[in-house]
Image (tube, rainbow, N blue to C red):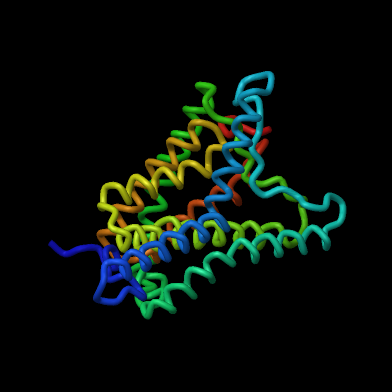
Length: 273
């Protein structure tokens, strides 16, 4: 059976010989993985858990509270606000650069996880198809769990009405997609495979991690993103590329952010804070 590219490859830096050398290589990979997660989505997962505890212990139901995604950082000061927005997007991508650096050091590079420009048409076409399927299903699921009281009202954007609003929302969507798919799918699965995890265990870890840093939205955010995580891992193993997943995630978030900006307060079915 053809195995997924990158999972279970030879440990970088591990040399044939005494068992202690291979063990040292595994420890290095484990520590590397934990540090990358601590600097990115792992830290977000802890933050989401604290936020969720605060929400469930606050008077009132979850649906009466709001989770703001793209909010103003300097109300009434648009240029300063823009500076903070760009700073936040740029710094959030540093862990991706770190992952690329680590992959290059092991001699593989980002091509090993399909984060390259080798098949742009394939990535965009399949990404669009996945976005259409997952995006529509996700919206219906969110509306249902919020109505049942298991989710906060998600406010995708609350930026001021300025010229840079749409470009910042698009950049934020792309940043989310690149960070999550490169780290939580491509890099995480590659390292867990090299550490000897079974495919099933690695899939569960990736899906649970994706759900955990969305817990600030409520139980619906946790469960919905875990299901999305399972689907994305299966697609990654089929294609051997994160490119289509990045495209799909970016399109889903662009539609969510821009759609909310255009429709909030104008249609009755879309919850607003």
